[in-house]
Image 1 (cartoon, helix red, strand yellow):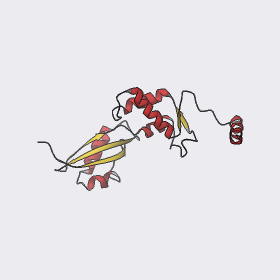
Image 2 (cartoon, helix red, strand yellow):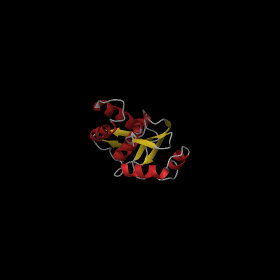
Image 3 (tube, helix red, strand yellow):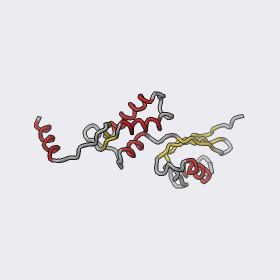
Image 4 (tube, rainbow, N blue to C red):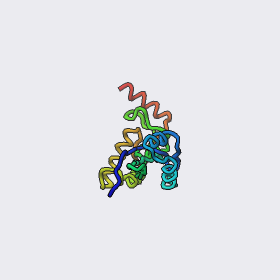
Length: 161
């Protein structure tokens, strides 16, 4: 007979860096789960993904045992890493803060296909491009032009129109 699930806990934990400190410790402790056992298992399974934020779904059973599923990193984290950014734009529609190539978008789509609601790689790439746009990241194969004297002239012309 299958064990009865008493709780499902969803956390975002940095890969290979789970420790009993918040948010992991309190979330698991309130359900009576062995925190150190989870941390060791999680860190072993996520070696090589250091620093990536990984969503994990932990199922806690009646006898206080657990199992967990590690999902792929959030699209925004993968896009920021691809564009070498610390954080996304605060004014996404107006300000472009980085760019990624179509090839990078395809690589991210391949990583995310297991967790997306489509099996089609082109549709997955389209979804990721939309996320990039909402973060202020341009999707193209040419780099962003460095702001120079011409950029200031274009801004002046744009304001006078």
